[in-house]
Length: 175
Image (cartoon, rainbow, N blue to C red; front, top):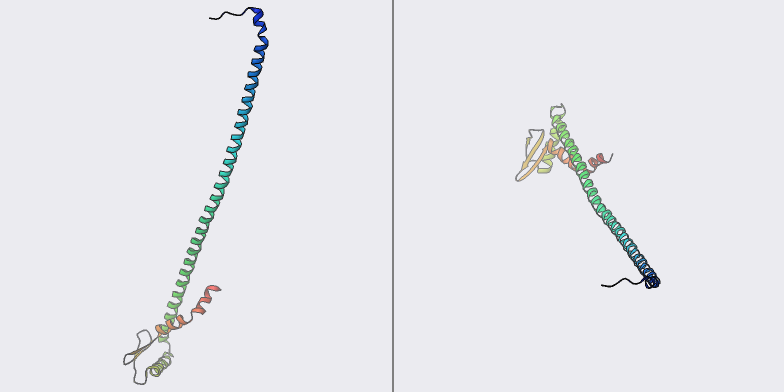
């Protein structure tokens, strides 16, 4: 075990002690400044990385949102187009149905016989004078000559007229 130094020797060591203590304090302060500097650099790097990640995520999120929005808009346009086409088809079918009903109603008119005679004449013009011509149950006539058949029934005539009037019927959708 060591013995304590006498007081005058102890006092002589005070400047050494003070210098060692000052050097230790200076080293500790330098280490603290260095640690704080490293901490600040790490925090700045972490903030920069976080900002880059957020910006990258935002760009990716916006891109994905754009893709999803584009797909949804395309789906919506297709659905709307399907709805419009279905409505147009329903109107077209209703037009055909009403025209057929109006044509069949011609049978009850007093001037129907004149129409019937014109249809018989047309059948004979197209198939020849020996064509077999019979009345259609819905009005108009059916004719045949050999293997050739001709349907001049009122519903068939309406169907032909409606089918040929596609552009005029299409104008109904654009008004």
